[in-house]
Length: 638
Image (cartoon, rainbow, N blue to C red; front, side, top):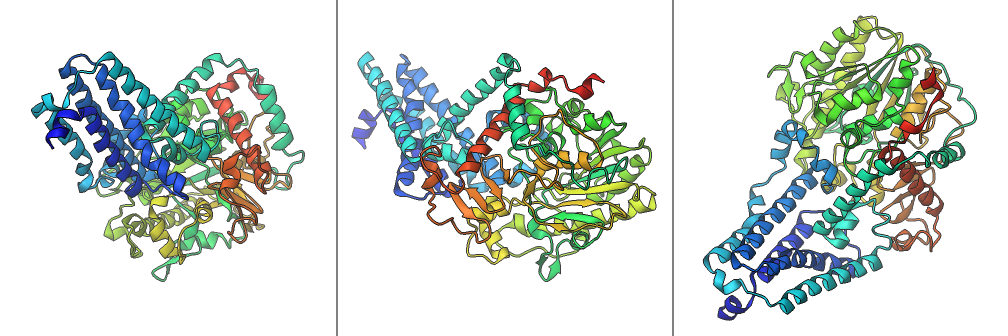
């Protein structure tokens, strides 16, 4: 012990303590998949490599007091970063990005959701910080060393060599890691949490400057791609069937398809939505996928209004709320529609007050438009039933035709509901989140049924089309053990995880009489062209990446924001090309097949994988470069 006290520098002790802590977090809190010994090795060494570089900077301070302060406060700040990622990961099974940190204005609204993600044992994350502060204050002379210039250079050189070695191993394990970095877990797994954040800062800086240097020269190439790969040459047979009708769009919070026509404790979870799957006035798309990323509900709004992909980092509503868009509300406005959004939440949440103006939405009925009390609120705010009840009075005042979107709240994490509002019992598993999910889903189902009846009573039903869409997943991969129990599976495989990204999508046309259950692969990117087609509105000069769901000429895949995709035959995820019918890897496939290099090894999924990468990149170009400002669309010139 005497030798350690006299010879081991404090920055080395801090590196060891912090590295061990971070590795424990990797292995036991973050649900990071490890498939081979190389990945195990990289995951073990990267926290020590990162923290050695971080703490070794202290040796360049000439005064011992400055060395001590740097190490103490660096340890504290770094621990807070780890803690913030842990809390975020428990909700989203993902890691924080810089754009999300800029969404701090949402924090006040998150309230109890954040508190529910904290655990009493989280205080243990700061034990190493306490040890470092104790040693630096009580025994500074034993641990703070004045390094010669040669010693300082050696410490720096050693940290850079270790970092280069880490990156070399990471590139061996995951070629093109930085150029094809759709998956943040791969970055954290291979280069560590702190290097991931440095990479994220660099990418964010690049994205910020992209708009400044954009000049519109990218547009012809993107238009050519859309013309050749996306747009259909012929109108579908459903073109104009809802011409001049009002559009009522229900954005169903956190609703996933696995509850449709399914039971819990012997009772139907969604009896009303189940009935719609058999209703002749309703089209139900059973293989419809959400395509959101970190922006969740706001991403789903962005997708349906623009038929562009959300960004891989942050929320477009925040980062690019002042861009020019050719959004659906603006297009509908040119056809005489008014556009309105009803959501009993603060107008500033997700920057909606600014973004809605950019999208061409005429009015936002936020929290101030509703009578919200302690009795009619739970969780995130106004319960769905009183929300729809009060919304009816607002709808009656709208000028027709209108496009009105209703965003529900009750079925939102952490899925709270009073006993008096529960009409089914909670599930029994090791996941409180999944257990509570079913009663709130049933409550939302009842509220939508009630809304249908209220529309009929108010005389608003017959001359409207009603669309119901799940906006994103409610149950993350953190609850896979409980989900496997509910679904009767031994485990949730990567293939199963992708299938759980399906969300319900209903198009209800009163009096239509030709509805059916449709099985084609589809997604939120398809909503805008489908709705415009149903309303008989042509949109030839636009740039978008979805298809009319009723068209016979459609892309043969749906891309997820992380680069995964689904088509009629295959599902590509986690580097594996799966047979979509069997859920088994395509013969000859391995996880390394696409990880090695898409350019080097041809697989069953390679052609679509290349196209997905290109399509996501083009969509990003449109957003980062604010390219719609360079486009003079014909309908904007009228």
